[in-house]
Length: 190
Image (cartoon, rainbow, N blue to C red; front, side, top):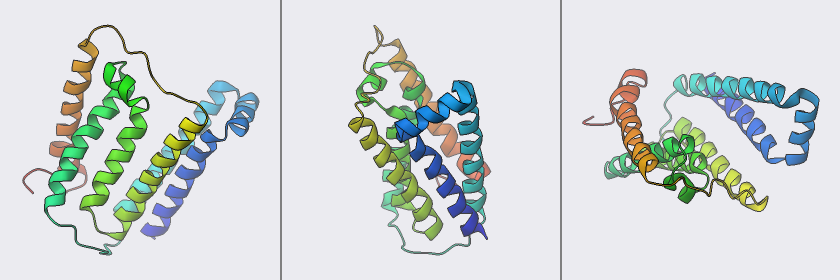
């Protein structure tokens, strides 16, 4: 049952997020629902898809596909620091955000790739593989439609310092709190 729910959640996530790249259909939906209505529906469906993904992933039986070498965990941890900083850069205008242009996509792709390196079970490969494929597709689609992303950094470097510091805090919170307490899987020292 867990695999079915995981796959359903991934399909709903992909459908809603691929729809965003179909600009004419998206514009039609916004015209019918209004900007706020469209955002509300998109948000609710996205949240529902994430709930299905998390529940499905948590309830899938362990099916080993490969055994990642232990050293890949260290690479995963390093990549997750980069993903955490990119995630924070999405929310704070900075030189980091301007350099990455689409920092949220960078964060998702890095997060997914990092976890593919250190997880060899079928559910992980399926989930992280779908997110990585979506991130790559979304970045290519943005480039094709001329979406250059964020390109104008603010004056000074204060926001960049904030991005890095908050990114490190997010990284440590994920490693020391979220993974061991929520996922019951220690990142550091485990």
